[in-house]
Length: 206
Image (cartoon, rainbow, N blue to C red):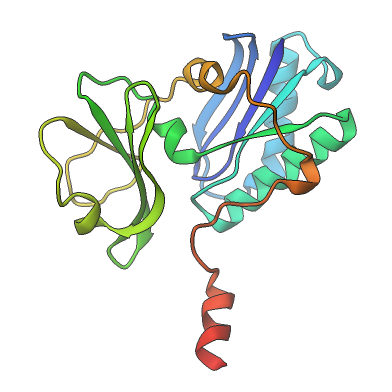
């Protein structure tokens, strides 16, 4: 089984191609601008480095949020186009669950993405990627209110607390979801977890 994973939900872009659980090619770099103009080339380079063509891909995993509004839209759109063209289903993945594949000797992992104004997109997972607290938009103080030494804090962002930078393990997330049925690409929706700025402004004006 040839697997493709796409994550553009943060500025730390990940594209991975795996043969079952073995990584054939992987791109994981910080890109702050012009993700939309670069992502197709990144995917194409990963395919080339894996000696594969797009038609060889069996499973498509798309990280559909939470995270950057723009980043989520890019990844979801690209994933849907690829899946539609190959007549494949899409397996959606949480960005916070992917961050939770970071190796740790703690019992639990708290992945976080800065959502501004003292809030984060956060969750709690154990080291087997079982979800202890669902992905949510939550204040940082509330999320960490019951934290103790059993918890590893993981984030790409500077949150003015001690965090471990994610070192994602794509093989681990694929193993967790390898038997997921997947969904029709037309049914894949972004998981923003919050309103866009335009939606917030509309509510204020209504």
